Length: 285
Image (cartoon, rainbow, N blue to C red; front, top):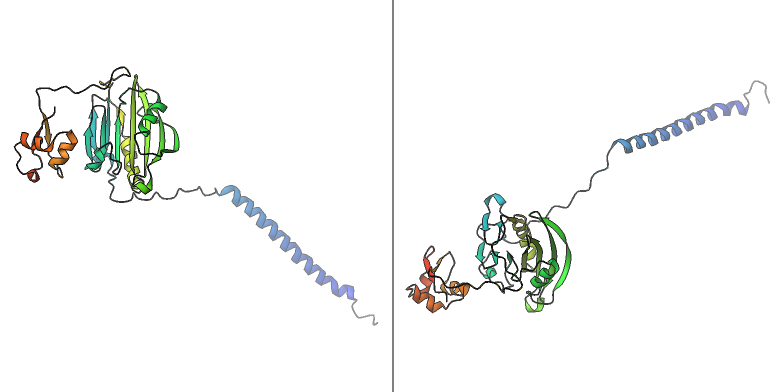
């Protein structure tokens, strides 16, 4: 070997040095990336979960804002509520029925949606007993889907969500019932509709229920020992104002009178010629 030729070690040293520099650069880059990741994790908040959008009500169900709702107030029952304009209302002795159709005003008709609020006939104060009395009015089988308590109108209510009836018989439906008591008077709210209509009507029922509020102490206070008061005849006749869509037979059924007697009492020869706004004397017994 010639003395002036560089050794293999001297030739390899620059290469080793370069490799060391590259290694240091790579390690430094990895450490810097980890540090930036930690900083980013501590300074950037994690995104908050978002609720899925609420689907619009099905069908042509009215979802009118409360500002344009129709008000109901009963001094006898001691409460008030608001319901969508265009819906029908029927006041009974101890309750009020709200429905988008005339068929829904019949408590025994479960083929149309309706909401009913009032005082139980026996003035039941026990929430569970009151709810049982409401549910047995629906076609069996009755199945409670959910239950709980809520605060409404300054009182604690017990509520249940339930299904009723059988699809094969065309009676399957879904409903919501709630019960409370105030000043030794029981109160209930129950809303129900056929199963296919319930998803669309439930938001409207909820708006009406949310508007419920007590206005004064109820005048009607039936007790377990005393049956609901029976209306007594008075010299003042009952007057009904014909509304759009009314028929003589429908009015007669609503008040439990004979259609022919109703026509004769009001001098109606052609039942089909009822006019909106016309006043009818109801011949109650």
